[in-house]
Length: 226
Figure 1 (cartoon, rainbow, N blue to C red):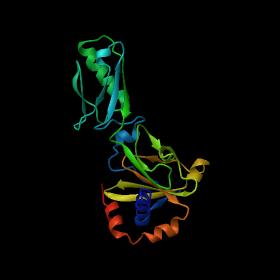
Figure 2 (cartoon, rainbow, N blue to C red; figure 1 turned 135 degrees about the vertical axis):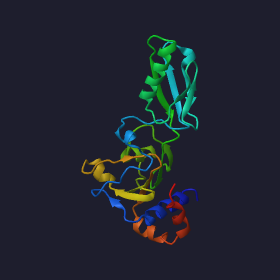
Figure 3 (cartoon, helix red, strand yellow; figure 1 turned 120 degrees about the horizontal axis):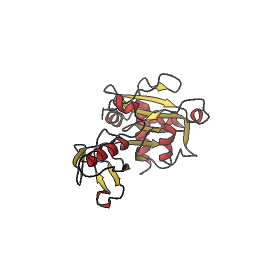
Figure 4 (cartoon, helix red, strand yellow; figure 1 turned 180 degrees about the vertical axis):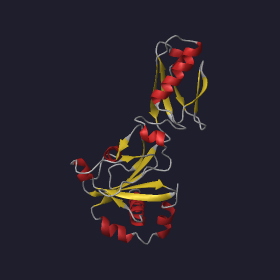
């Protein structure tokens, strides 16, 4: 019974996708939550509730694990509250070093790493070995995201039909991709973003989806905006 609910969710999402994009066609645009700055960034952008490891070389009292609060700030000794949300780990490292240098240290060496990302998560469902919700700790492609769920189920998965659902322009948008084409280098491996839903279809997906097209209540719930 526990394995059936994710399958119901996957089938309902795929069946409800209106005018989906397909691999080789127009790419699925980035989600509403992605800014121009984060699109251009190479590194992960810190968000509220993320857990960070902050290491200040040769200063054990300043080396600690902290959580970004709901307002997007961290509280550090000698520095006080500092904005963290929207910064990359490298940018926050520089911010902390600048604050320490201004008052206390000549040449502070600060390294910030993301220990646990709460603000950027992706849901991976359908015919994968470990469906669930997984954190994204950096730029992540579709192939990399599916691997977080321990890859497609070798007995059930239709790797030629993998759906990505995303909130774009206030609406639920979708695109379908062929993992076999991506793996062979014949198709681009698209980037995925926080709050994306990835569904790997089953090998018997057509009839399976048709069986659940009438589940209007579940479909209606799933296609509402976040």
